[in-house]
Length: 245
Image (tube, helix red, strand yellow):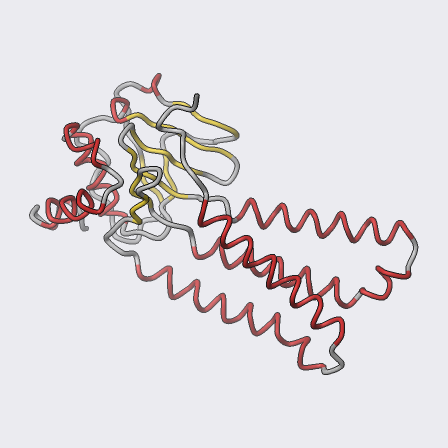
Protein backbone atom coordinates (compact mmCIF):
# COMPACT_ATOMS: atom_id res chain seq x y z
CA UNK A 1 0.00 0.00 0.00
CA UNK A 2 1.37 3.42 -0.94
CA UNK A 3 2.01 5.83 1.89
CA UNK A 4 -0.16 8.98 2.04
CA UNK A 5 2.81 11.22 1.28
CA UNK A 6 3.50 9.40 -2.00
CA UNK A 7 -0.08 8.79 -3.13
CA UNK A 8 -1.38 11.24 -5.71
CA UNK A 9 -2.61 11.66 -9.27
CA UNK A 10 -1.30 13.34 -12.40
CA UNK A 11 -4.54 14.53 -14.00
CA UNK A 12 -3.18 17.83 -15.29
CA UNK A 13 -0.19 16.14 -16.90
CA UNK A 14 -2.42 13.64 -18.70
CA UNK A 15 -4.77 16.32 -19.99
CA UNK A 16 -1.96 18.50 -21.31
CA UNK A 17 -0.12 15.59 -22.90
CA UNK A 18 -3.35 14.37 -24.51
CA UNK A 19 -4.05 17.82 -25.94
CA UNK A 20 -0.50 18.04 -27.29
CA UNK A 21 -0.75 14.62 -28.96
CA UNK A 22 -4.12 15.46 -30.53
CA UNK A 23 -2.75 18.78 -31.81
CA UNK A 24 0.31 17.05 -33.26
CA UNK A 25 -1.73 14.35 -35.02
CA UNK A 26 -4.11 16.97 -36.43
CA UNK A 27 -1.18 19.03 -37.69
CA UNK A 28 0.41 15.93 -39.25
CA UNK A 29 -2.79 15.07 -41.12
CA UNK A 30 -3.55 18.62 -42.24
CA UNK A 31 -0.04 19.52 -43.36
CA UNK A 32 0.32 16.24 -45.22
CA UNK A 33 -2.66 17.12 -47.43
CA UNK A 34 -2.31 20.88 -47.78
CA UNK A 35 -0.62 22.51 -50.74
CA UNK A 36 -0.31 25.99 -49.26
CA UNK A 37 3.07 27.07 -48.00
CA UNK A 38 1.40 29.05 -45.23
CA UNK A 39 0.82 25.82 -43.30
CA UNK A 40 4.58 25.52 -42.86
CA UNK A 41 4.57 28.75 -40.84
CA UNK A 42 2.04 27.52 -38.28
CA UNK A 43 4.56 25.72 -36.00
CA UNK A 44 6.86 28.73 -35.89
CA UNK A 45 4.01 31.13 -35.10
CA UNK A 46 2.87 28.73 -32.37
CA UNK A 47 6.38 28.56 -30.93
CA UNK A 48 6.71 32.34 -30.81
CA UNK A 49 3.29 32.69 -29.19
CA UNK A 50 4.17 30.03 -26.63
CA UNK A 51 7.46 31.72 -25.84
CA UNK A 52 5.70 35.04 -25.23
CA UNK A 53 3.08 33.33 -23.05
CA UNK A 54 5.78 31.57 -21.03
CA UNK A 55 7.68 34.82 -20.44
CA UNK A 56 4.48 36.57 -19.32
CA UNK A 57 3.50 33.70 -17.00
CA UNK A 58 6.96 33.70 -15.44
CA UNK A 59 6.47 37.29 -14.23
CA UNK A 60 3.19 36.69 -12.40
CA UNK A 61 4.42 34.74 -9.36
CA UNK A 62 1.08 34.41 -7.50
CA UNK A 63 0.89 34.32 -3.71
CA UNK A 64 -1.45 31.34 -3.67
CA UNK A 65 -1.36 27.58 -4.15
CA UNK A 66 -3.18 25.29 -6.52
CA UNK A 67 -5.61 23.39 -4.27
CA UNK A 68 -5.72 19.66 -5.05
CA UNK A 69 -8.43 18.14 -2.89
CA UNK A 70 -7.97 14.71 -4.45
CA UNK A 71 -4.40 14.16 -3.27
CA UNK A 72 -4.88 16.25 -0.94
CA UNK A 73 -2.23 18.96 -1.36
CA UNK A 74 -1.37 22.59 -1.92
CA UNK A 75 0.79 22.73 -5.05
CA UNK A 76 2.81 25.22 -7.05
CA UNK A 77 1.25 24.17 -10.36
CA UNK A 78 2.82 23.22 -13.67
CA UNK A 79 5.72 25.22 -15.02
CA UNK A 80 4.76 27.22 -18.10
CA UNK A 81 8.25 26.68 -19.50
CA UNK A 82 7.87 22.89 -19.35
CA UNK A 83 4.45 23.03 -21.00
CA UNK A 84 5.82 25.30 -23.73
CA UNK A 85 8.77 23.06 -24.55
CA UNK A 86 6.61 19.93 -24.59
CA UNK A 87 4.22 21.50 -27.09
CA UNK A 88 7.14 22.87 -29.12
CA UNK A 89 8.79 19.46 -29.39
CA UNK A 90 5.57 17.78 -30.50
CA UNK A 91 4.77 20.49 -33.05
CA UNK A 92 8.24 20.30 -34.58
CA UNK A 93 8.01 16.51 -34.63
CA UNK A 94 4.68 16.61 -36.46
CA UNK A 95 5.97 19.20 -38.93
CA UNK A 96 9.09 17.22 -39.82
CA UNK A 97 7.18 13.94 -40.02
CA UNK A 98 4.67 15.54 -42.39
CA UNK A 99 7.48 16.77 -44.64
CA UNK A 100 8.83 13.22 -44.92
CA UNK A 101 5.42 11.62 -45.18
CA UNK A 102 5.92 10.15 -48.66
CA UNK A 103 9.30 8.67 -47.73
CA UNK A 104 7.84 7.28 -44.52
CA UNK A 105 5.01 5.49 -46.33
CA UNK A 106 6.76 4.29 -49.51
CA UNK A 107 10.41 4.34 -48.48
CA UNK A 108 12.59 1.50 -47.21
CA UNK A 109 11.66 -0.28 -44.01
CA UNK A 110 14.66 1.02 -42.08
CA UNK A 111 13.61 4.62 -42.76
CA UNK A 112 10.10 4.04 -41.41
CA UNK A 113 11.55 2.32 -38.34
CA UNK A 114 14.01 5.17 -37.74
CA UNK A 115 11.31 7.83 -38.04
CA UNK A 116 9.01 5.85 -35.74
CA UNK A 117 11.73 5.51 -33.09
CA UNK A 118 12.54 9.20 -33.36
CA UNK A 119 8.88 10.16 -32.94
CA UNK A 120 8.61 7.83 -29.95
CA UNK A 121 11.69 9.44 -28.39
CA UNK A 122 10.21 12.92 -28.81
CA UNK A 123 6.94 11.74 -27.27
CA UNK A 124 8.76 10.30 -24.25
CA UNK A 125 10.77 13.52 -23.86
CA UNK A 126 7.53 15.54 -23.94
CA UNK A 127 6.04 13.27 -21.29
CA UNK A 128 9.09 13.80 -19.08
CA UNK A 129 8.79 17.57 -19.47
CA UNK A 130 5.11 17.46 -18.57
CA UNK A 131 5.82 15.52 -15.42
CA UNK A 132 4.77 17.72 -12.51
CA UNK A 133 7.87 19.57 -11.38
CA UNK A 134 7.36 21.67 -8.31
CA UNK A 135 6.49 21.55 -4.65
CA UNK A 136 3.43 20.09 -2.97
CA UNK A 137 2.50 20.66 0.66
CA UNK A 138 0.65 17.60 1.95
CA UNK A 139 -0.60 16.64 5.42
CA UNK A 140 2.43 14.36 5.86
CA UNK A 141 5.06 16.75 4.50
CA UNK A 142 6.60 18.15 1.33
CA UNK A 143 6.76 16.33 -2.00
CA UNK A 144 9.33 17.93 -4.29
CA UNK A 145 8.92 16.59 -7.84
CA UNK A 146 11.85 16.93 -10.18
CA UNK A 147 12.56 15.94 -13.75
CA UNK A 148 13.63 12.37 -13.02
CA UNK A 149 12.68 11.81 -9.40
CA UNK A 150 10.80 12.87 -6.29
CA UNK A 151 12.08 14.15 -2.94
CA UNK A 152 9.85 13.29 0.04
CA UNK A 153 10.32 15.43 3.16
CA UNK A 154 8.18 14.76 6.27
CA UNK A 155 7.34 17.84 8.32
CA UNK A 156 9.27 16.36 11.25
CA UNK A 157 12.48 16.51 9.20
CA UNK A 158 12.35 20.29 8.74
CA UNK A 159 13.92 22.78 11.14
CA UNK A 160 11.58 25.30 12.84
CA UNK A 161 11.95 28.85 11.55
CA UNK A 162 13.11 27.78 8.11
CA UNK A 163 13.19 28.35 5.15
CA UNK A 164 14.34 31.91 5.66
CA UNK A 165 12.38 34.75 3.97
CA UNK A 166 12.97 34.67 0.22
CA UNK A 167 12.90 37.29 -2.55
CA UNK A 168 9.69 37.11 -4.57
CA UNK A 169 11.35 35.90 -7.80
CA UNK A 170 13.93 33.54 -6.33
CA UNK A 171 14.38 30.42 -8.46
CA UNK A 172 15.54 28.10 -5.67
CA UNK A 173 15.06 27.69 -1.94
CA UNK A 174 17.26 25.94 0.66
CA UNK A 175 15.79 23.37 3.04
CA UNK A 176 17.20 23.03 6.56
CA UNK A 177 16.79 19.68 8.30
CA UNK A 178 16.83 18.64 11.95
CA UNK A 179 16.22 14.99 11.08
CA UNK A 180 17.73 14.39 7.63
CA UNK A 181 17.42 10.62 8.06
CA UNK A 182 13.65 10.99 7.52
CA UNK A 183 14.11 12.44 4.03
CA UNK A 184 13.49 9.93 1.23
CA UNK A 185 13.64 10.01 -2.53
CA UNK A 186 12.31 8.13 -5.52
CA UNK A 187 14.10 7.97 -8.85
CA UNK A 188 17.09 10.20 -9.59
CA UNK A 189 17.35 13.27 -7.37
CA UNK A 190 20.49 15.37 -7.07
CA UNK A 191 20.72 17.65 -4.05
CA UNK A 192 18.35 17.21 -1.14
CA UNK A 193 18.84 20.66 0.37
CA UNK A 194 17.67 22.83 -2.51
CA UNK A 195 14.23 23.15 -4.09
CA UNK A 196 13.53 24.63 -7.51
CA UNK A 197 10.70 27.18 -7.33
CA UNK A 198 8.40 27.29 -10.38
CA UNK A 199 5.32 29.51 -10.87
CA UNK A 200 4.83 30.90 -7.36
CA UNK A 201 5.99 33.76 -5.13
CA UNK A 202 9.09 32.35 -3.42
CA UNK A 203 8.55 34.32 -0.21
CA UNK A 204 4.98 33.05 0.04
CA UNK A 205 6.09 29.43 -0.40
CA UNK A 206 8.78 29.78 2.27
CA UNK A 207 6.33 31.40 4.70
CA UNK A 208 3.77 28.63 4.16
CA UNK A 209 6.36 25.93 4.87
CA UNK A 210 7.49 27.73 8.03
CA UNK A 211 3.89 28.03 9.13
CA UNK A 212 3.11 24.33 8.89
CA UNK A 213 6.39 23.36 10.52
CA UNK A 214 5.36 25.52 13.49
CA UNK A 215 1.64 24.54 13.48
CA UNK A 216 1.31 20.74 13.21
CA UNK A 217 -2.33 20.91 14.31
CA UNK A 218 -3.27 22.56 11.00
CA UNK A 219 -1.59 20.07 8.66
CA UNK A 220 -4.50 17.63 8.48
CA UNK A 221 -6.63 20.23 6.67
CA UNK A 222 -4.07 20.81 3.89
CA UNK A 223 -5.68 20.32 0.48
CA UNK A 224 -9.00 22.00 1.25
CA UNK A 225 -10.26 25.38 0.08
CA UNK A 226 -11.17 26.31 3.65
CA UNK A 227 -7.65 25.70 4.91
CA UNK A 228 -6.15 27.52 1.94
CA UNK A 229 -8.24 30.61 2.69
CA UNK A 230 -7.33 30.39 6.37
CA UNK A 231 -3.62 30.07 5.49
CA UNK A 232 -3.78 33.16 3.28
CA UNK A 233 -5.38 35.15 6.09
CA UNK A 234 -2.80 33.91 8.59
CA UNK A 235 0.15 34.85 6.36
CA UNK A 236 -1.38 38.20 5.38
CA UNK A 237 -1.82 39.12 9.04
CA UNK A 238 1.91 38.78 9.62
CA UNK A 239 4.46 41.54 8.97
CA UNK A 240 5.31 41.70 5.24
CA UNK A 241 8.99 41.05 5.98
CA UNK A 242 8.10 37.53 7.05
CA UNK A 243 6.93 36.44 3.62
CA UNK A 244 8.11 39.15 1.21
CA UNK A 245 11.55 40.59 0.67
